Image (cartoon, rainbow, N blue to C red; front, side, top):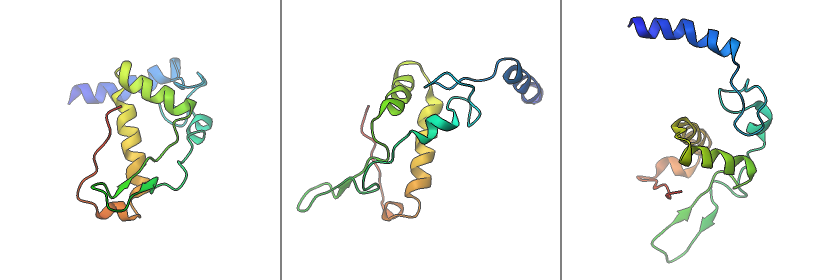
Length: 116
């Protein structure tokens, strides 16, 4: 418990002395601790998301991709895979949850991620 209190005191001080930088452009990340406001809005929603592909007479009903694989997404995925930035996976999962919450995807039994 003492560690949590100490972290809540020290972390804001460290962030004030050494503000977190955006992984994409290097500007001060005010949006969250690794992505600035501009780079967040550079993430492009993929075409007809949530339905990127629909097939008839197939084992797979639908395939979806939330974001286009642009430069911002490329850097985020690279950091997730090779720089042990697990928080990016949590961020992207939360974004998918927010976006798909009010679509037919909320009724699916299983969503299987494709290995990167």
